[in-house]
Length: 351
Image (tube, rainbow, N blue to C red; front, side, top):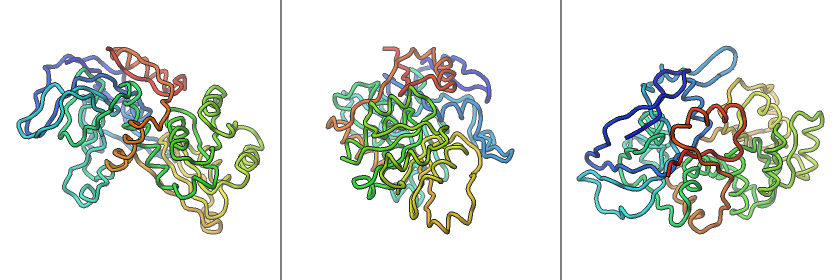
């Protein structure tokens, strides 16, 4: 098998050639058809997250061992299965649920594997999809893509699921109030498509990039606002017809956190998804005085992924823009993503 690997944090990916994978027990091996390139992959390559105030979360101190094949948005075809994998249709093309936990703790048993304290996330803790093959621990993590093109299905495992998981946290507000969406990258555009599928009110988008703002409008936003404008908060309120009751931040930077916080109405909910980095800029008394809820959202559960795939197979979700590249272009694609040059989602697909 051929793969692109992180051999040293902070350094470019390097190509590896390894023996083909052999499944054991319940494992399944897939031939990779498409692998999405996610902003999280930039943090993995770089070795951590900026926590603000000079602090940094270091992956090397959190049990992430190298070399590592990145890639957690993977579609493929089954080529081998272990003796205990059971019977399932090996003739289908599957998208892989990557947020795999230990399977035995109370969190995993409750159905929230993405929150497991001892995770085995594909492409992060174990090898992922920047490769010609991927190993999956059990066929229960395989979801039939039906007639969805592989390059469209791959981002559903992270971009789609992460947006869907965040929307589930504010779903009671979506039909009657315009959601504030910060960031019109792959996650934000997926969120816009999901809002249409959920018959929600048109959202208000914020992004610094005029090209991405145009993409948000094309995806169904009622407005797309430049956050650098001196009256950005007033523009948000005017477009939404009120101070938003919910906001989802797909960037997660200090500047976006300040804007989202300032734009919310009283009793509003601010959901942080993005991992750009930094520290919270809020005045603590205002959280209580305005009765705000601030919460995080990380990926989504297997149950939420099942719901999402049902929507996708029924064609309720319009695909976001995707551009396909060769596997050996992974490093170049990551650099383009870091420079903000990717609109929608980049996909590694040699076929």
